[in-house]
Length: 412
Image (cartoon, helix red, strand yellow):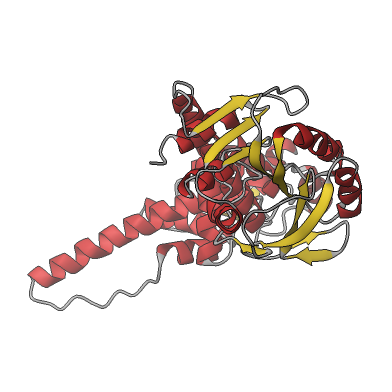
């Protein structure tokens, strides 16, 4: 062990970049009381490899000398790797770990290049190159900087790279991981969902823009309108719809029932989906204006939907069927309908075309007219046209109506 004047030493630029100027108040007080107990590790040209905070404390305390151990390194690559090894037990933030990971990635890549060059030279000289099994780079780095498994490291790298590109959501998530408000896995899922949502918004926006210029057809007509004020002189064979389910929208069911009395042919049917949570209230308001006909079941695809307010995992939803006069004389139909898969690409609350077609094909005859006063993105309309019926629909959201126009115009 030797002693050097702290003013002769200089911080290693890699350490400054990786760890910055962390708080050293506690170290200053410890050294003031006990002195420097563990020597700094430096290179033979006075560059600090380990002990930057002890060195800064010594400068603050104006110590004449500090204990040092001098290490010699073959090259700059070995010097960089040594810094990482000296700091491997240090408590670090996610950002510090990812800065370490970037350096480690560069080191591993350069070491691999040098090994490949060495092996090539040996091969040219007639020697068999040694086997080189180093494992996956991501696994090596994740283990070295204590991020976790290869899979976890790759997730961390995706978050980090997005943050470096200026992605605001990723920047926020990096800060959250730094402060332990998020795990890497949780942040990755949040970023993935956020990016998917942005992509979905862009797709919907493009579809809506394309739909603006599409004219109405003799097979379908969709408009921006409010169920409360919409006026038409038409009467329809069926009203098939899916109003929103949250409690604040319950009044819409009574509006639907009242307007159905105006819009539906005397022998027609209202077929409306609803949630189970307020089913008793929906029965009551529909029955004020219409005659109850039947309750059918719509089997929902995929995993059960958790209804936390009722502690129920639901795999179906009711389809309530009402009539203005109880004089329905149409097809005999079944009362269980199924969907092949969920379809939420065009609307957050959208139903699948296969599910709506399951209903329409069992109840409606080709050529009949069907109206949907909660149009959404037009899945009901697509199914109506596929079955050879005529479709009308309204919605208060202009983007949804234009998306519907884009979809309906494609049905031949």
